[in-house]
Length: 440
Image (cartoon, rainbow, N blue to C red; front, side):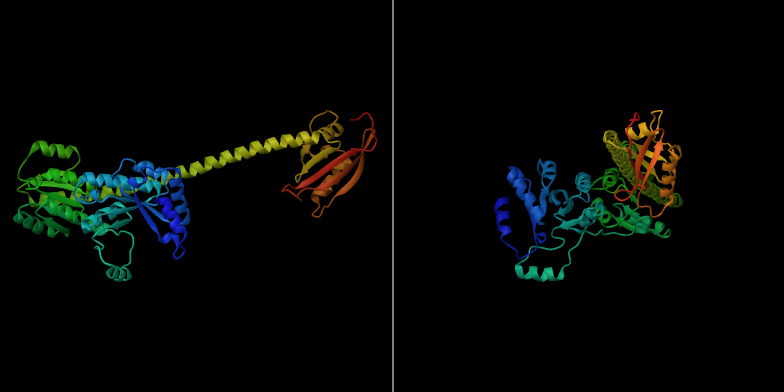
């Protein structure tokens, strides 16, 4: 299939390759060979966009992400259908998104039919959505009209701001009169109050609103309060969850508190001022937790940057040590070469210190047979020392020849400036004997 597609595509030049997206399922790749893999890489190299469809329903998803040049994964709609109210689906999608982010692969959520589904996956960090919420199946004429009017883009989270998050409370109770009494009591504190009589509708409200504190009844027809808040904890962990009930089911409440699903358990009938104080404290605690989480994230970001910089530093130190080792080897080779030439060689740096000498220079100028390296030019014969001093002080030194004597031998020396082919600054001296005697 991919080979035929590649051959056909190569014959068309009517549009840019990056405008084409090829979607394929894991099933299509289950029996691939090396040539198929190469074909996909060729399509990718041309700029074609590759998407792995129905991700999460097969057995080889992770190996596909590693073996093929996939740009984006499409999360199967079965995980999206109940994502606003099922913690298991929420956990699967969260894991897929985290993995895709780590691998730098794009994501699209399939099967989005409701605004609540859109809001949840957008809040989780999914990049794109696909489904009936955005458009229904249509004919060509309607499609052209729709495309001309529609401006596609990344998923945008539906909800309120962080400031409202710290003032929004959700009340869940199957008794309407209880909800009315709670709203009258809490309205004076300036909260943005949401209310519902069912857990199902509560999940819908949570999907489309940033809620800070949730107060739920314990006994409700669909599920009890502890079960409801346990689900909420998994899907919306940045909430403070409270039970307000006239019934004390000690075991289930204790279990929920131990799991961290419930912040506080309050009883009916309630004391107005005590309830207001508990809710205000819950919002304050939420704010502290959010600030701590933000600080923790900032610390993690800084630590990650420090690790990155430390890795770069270690790499550069390693590279520098390798360069030093190479330079040392080069210097040893150079020294061996110089020791085998038939002239004496001195290298003098810009500070007047001898940085290099070969075997003949040491033997001729240093009777004690010590190396001249690190000695000053002042330790050299007077005529040579004076010439080197003048050369180092001159701004336009171009070279000089001179003769000097040492004991019973005469030498010819050529002084040349350094820096023509290197960054070195100084003078290079080459010497030869004018009369051959016992000094060698």
